[in-house]
Length: 163
Length: 77
Image (tube, rainbow over all chains, first blue to last red; front, side, top):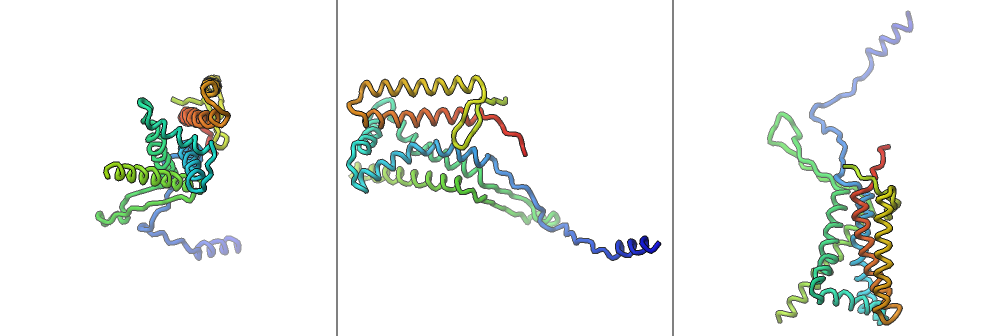
C-alpha cells in the first residue's frame, strides 16, 4: 500500500512540460540533391577550366614559358577560332561552372516559406538554411572564380575590340 | 525507371552491371583511339600529352555525367 501511495504522490507532483502551440516546430530540412553526389559530379565539371586556368597562371603570372603551358593556351584559342567547335570554349568556361554552382547549391541549401502563427494569417516566415559542407562550398567558390575570370576576360576583350 | 549501372567510390564511378562495363569499355576505347590519332598528328611528346589530357578530361566528364544519372541508389541507413 505504501508503495502505491508513494507512486500516486509522485505522479501527482510530476511537472508536465509546457508545450506552447505557437512554438516553432522542429522540422527535417532536406536538401533537393545529395551533397556527396553533387560534389563528385562538380569536380568533373570544373576540372577542365581549372586545369586551363592553372596553365594560364603558370604561363603569364609565373613566367614559366614551358611548352606544356603555352600549348594548352594555343589549344583553347585554336578551339575558339575553329568553325564548328567554337562553342566548346564557352560551354567549358561558362555552362559547366554554372551547372556546378546550381547542383552544389541545391545540395546544401534549404528554403521554406510558411505561416508562424495560425491565428494571424498575414504573419509569415521565410527561412533559408545553408549546410556547412566544405567540399560543396569549395566547388561553388572555385566555379565562381572561373566564371569571374571568364566574364572579365570576355568583357575586356569586347571593350578592346570596340576601341 | 531505376538504372543501377554504376556505383560511386569517391569521385570515381565504377560499373556495377554489364551495361556499365560496356560504357566504360567504350570510353576507354575512345580514349585510346584519340591518343593514337593525336599521336600520329603531333610533333612532340608534350604536344601529344596536352591534347590527349584535354580529350581525356572531356571523356571523363561525359562518362561521369552518364554514371551520375544511372547510379545505383544506396539503401537508407
